[in-house]
Image 1 (cartoon, protein in one colour):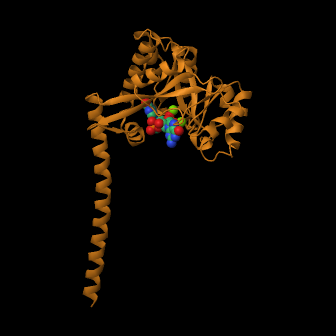
Image 2 (cartoon, rainbow, N blue to C red):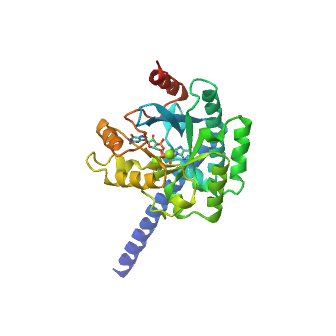
Image 3 (cartoon, helix red, strand yellow):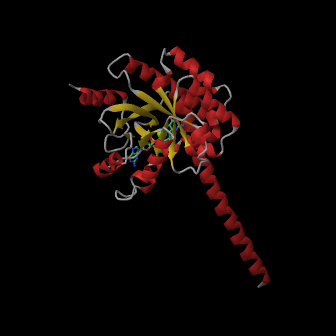
Length: 283
Ligand code: C2E
Ligand code: MG
Ligand code: MG
Ligand code: MG
């Protein structure tokens, strides 16, 4: 009987181990597959930039676009939530970000020389990029190569990054601002950042996180507070994730400057942005 009990323990023990082992294996394999897919995408030029328009809540015009990266795998789009964190963990974020910057600049130049002369192109910047000491010079070189004015480009930095910002990150942000780039704080309101940063850093714009815009139409208390706060610091305010006219109306009443969201458009390819622009600016 004792032998039988011992045998039972060993058996379940081994099974338990095998189960966990198998579970880990699946995770590791999935991760490895995603990493390989990303590496391959970077090499085979399978990245795409899509653009979501940013609308003035004062006059309804398109003021700019946000560049949002996608992977095109077997004809299907893969969204950044599935690969940005892998890119950050593996260091591939640097190559990916360089590609995004060049592609956004190339497109911005085409637009600047055409009918979308004044359009601002906003680019999301990974916190990891800001830790690279020569970042601002690298960016300035790309701008010069495309013969583009820095004021056409805005870098979106997540507010959460400020919570862990080092001295160097602050220096990079100041350097980019000195060079003439615009800077915004993305997902604002979710990061619990030290508000003193609003005074210390040359941030132009606060982007109110979608969760405060779309949670319920009647309750915009936090959005309202951010608009008030931003206003008193002289920042312009963009609301992310506007999906309904009611939300738009409420934000207009609160004095929000710009909006972005599915109400206007999802992120679309550059040609579709041009069509949209023709419609809006047609006499
Ligand atoms: P984000 O910068 O806050 O971008 C806004 C996200 O919300 C986008 O998702 C956009 O498609 C989505 N969105 C816009 N309007 C609405 C709306 O009305 N309703 C809803 N439900 N969603 C809306 P996307 O493109 O999947 O990007 C997710 C995140 O990935 C971005 O959040 C950004 O943090 C990151 N990301 C995107 N492109 C890049 C990039 O080139 N570099 C880096 N480092 N991160 C990027
Ligand atoms: Mg963004
Ligand atoms: Mg955001
Ligand atoms: Mg986000």
